[in-house]
Image (cartoon, rainbow, N blue to C red; front, top):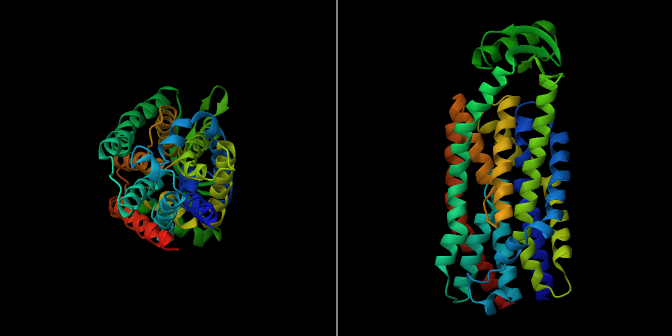
Length: 370
């Protein structure tokens, strides 16, 4: 009975993780108009699943870290009641955030549930290990993402200009040019697009296009390919970093190996993303900052470097915080950040850990009473 509960709880958490996190890697593809929602979601699903399956070979340290050993005593961490409570508490936290369209950190939810379930069991919590092994990388990573974006994005922009690649803002019907604008896609440009849509009888959109060639290839085509590659890198990195955190709790089931745990979790993450990603996708793609193709590529490139590096070092960073941090940085540089939505996201981040702890404790008491 208890083994069935922990299996269901972990798969619930994996599903919630996919629903809240899967689209984050490709949010810039959708938000910048590089591709549509379905294609972006398909690319996210495939690359995240590849990261999940790779995790068993490259992320062994994370697989061990999230069993709870070292945070609570080893005897409690080895019980299925504790593992099930942690998974269910974290899963409920992420599902609630997904329902509200808020991109939160599964890592924060898990850490909160580890603490809350341990407290409910009457165990001593090793806050020293939490501080050095969990809190430090979780707090530093979004700040690093913002700082890296503020530093690298202007460098990438200047490099593009030196290569002779220019940009223009245009009003287009599909790929057909209607009018070139002297300004970016601001309120005036959008109003003009609406006016032309009425006149032409077709939808006119405001787009940023790149002109010139890179290595003999059209710059816009090259950028779109690099953008897809960078989005795939972020999704791959997310699967690599998140899957072992969730799969760790399935190790309590004797019949499952590390590869089996990782494969089960990877499939559940993929299903969660396919079925329930839309609300968080809209928040990440359209409500944090306006962006063009180059800005989306820059944000993804920086996110992937940080998350892949952290996974290799066994540091439990939040892909959500890193990817959002990169978007915050882009919005700051371009002065197009939607600060009201950013404030709501930061507020959601603040309550994630205590909510995960509360639900983890409640789940432990409930499971123990069964």
